[in-house]
Image (cartoon, rainbow, N blue to C red; front, top):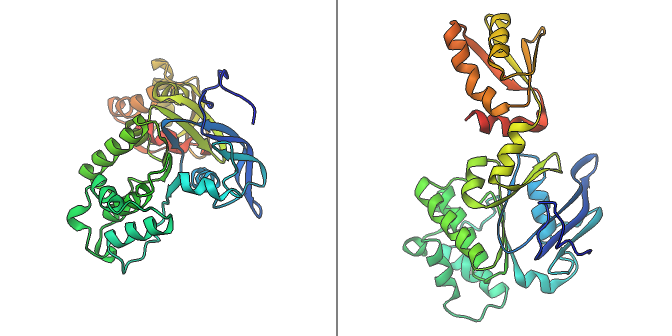
Length: 315
């Protein structure tokens, strides 16, 4: 790997512990990652992207569960696919719920500790306490809610005290209190100097978790940087948006007068607007239609690769 410490590209960090260089992964005809290059270092980095963007594939490549068809992935300078010692220093919380339902939370965490040769007798209890699971530690996982199962998986990952922690959609199913607690936990682990990689398809969630964000779209890196840079990238990128309404011509003229769109065209599907101010358009469409007494039927981005990001702006 080349030294990218002085690289100005926000996809790279100076003190990288995880490096991905020109990595491609494909399954038959499906390309999951395409020539992806980025790196991760101490602190919390968020992976943002819609479902199917390649986030889970990247995470599985980082922990060595799958190999890359081209390019390289290293953790602390070693190949996680072939170097077993890497596995002692990295932990994955997968998105799927493949947990043994017959075990209690305590048994699950202790089982993982035993597999990794953790000799500290108090490690399992500390890990359960970190995720506020002690009151339910001796209940079987089959009776847990999705959010509780997520916390049990996080505890199982923490019991090995890993310097590198990879979390795939860890907040799925968690209630607001659980979410806030887990976010504080992950940020605290990052502040300790651990490399924490967290994925989500929800922009506001990633913003609460991480100061640095990488956006994946169709297996490629679409944007990187801090929260402000990501929002600016979303707002500034030209979009094509379909608006279906009762009177598309009047609505299009109004949006043009407001300066929120660069151009409009009438098609059989409806009004297609072009804008490089997606945030302003998202805010302006409904009030403009309401003022004109026009009923909106649909507002939908036509740029499929940006659909999820646009939806978050609309929210």
